[in-house]
Image 1 (cartoon, rainbow, N blue to C red):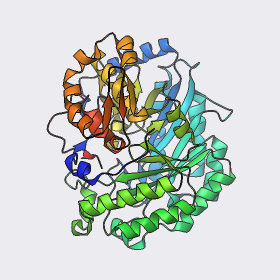
Image 2: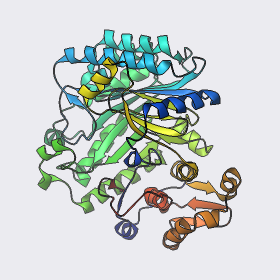
Image 3: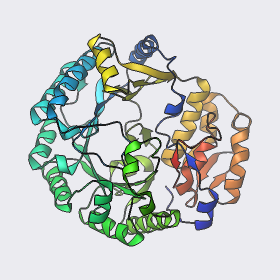
Image 4: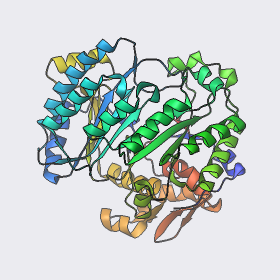
Length: 458
């Protein structure tokens, strides 16, 4: 994996927007022509592979709104709203389990949101028990079972319970520790709250703890974010994600509640990113890619060194061979050669489950070209390297002929030192690792000039 190099001139040249490639094709290509019958057919084909499973549960409730948030959430202080939602989720768990062989182990499980710990401790136990009743979960702690945590909605008792239920990886939303920034984005969260969760996770035997930060928020400066990073590093997380905030108030109405005049300039944002990269690499963290850093002994770093890293809708993962079943409102699944998504509205989701029908409303079945391009993009975005001969042998193509357009688009990047290309490999250089999204975009058959719906690559 390359060490990062920060080149301001190249950043200005490649200052574009583009997909984050948690899937290829991306969700933009999902269609309502994809039917429930299509999904059931893909599940049947999936059973023939015997692959392990990954389960994702979307728990959409939040007690308060964070103004920057672009997630699908339901903001309410009424905790009683959770149980009716869970009742429908249990019905969905039952119906999904009927489609998949119970011999297939669940190697990966994730609770996301929203705020998963919005639900009560008894409801957490009930959800996990219902899952175990219908799917073949590990009992020996060998699975990758993770949960997103808002430290304001969890304490030591909650963390101990989650460990007891089988979770072994934890991701904490922090975003920024500066009080002025927190007030500007309506997320007041003390360092003590975050530390309590991190310490409880370590004490109870969680395998890893990750912290999420966002740069580009109102009132952030290079100096204040450097202080945030210094504070966070004292908590010694195993992984760090530093996301680029995308201000799209036309798409996400709550972002209008922030003062756009207080957003840092593009130059300041780049300064924040450069200092953050220098600080993290000096602290010994490895750049995994796409805003993610990990300690050298972390499983993500090990998987990248061994070329076993994978990327899915939850980000980077070590479980490349799982079929993903998405459950809950708006969740996305990846079954065999297809992607599918549940209904986005709570009322629509509820109505579908009350009629004993899965809530899938759109998706896509991948064709041969999709699968080839997905392989290429995944290799580059995870491992910063593509074995051309292996790709040719695996997919029965002449790489130079099939990807003639992409190779022409890469010429300028090769001249700028972002990639090194010969007849055997495409290697992403230290300079190019920051531009991995740009590089992957050259292989995207669907990408058009309209990239406004995507975030900046940096």
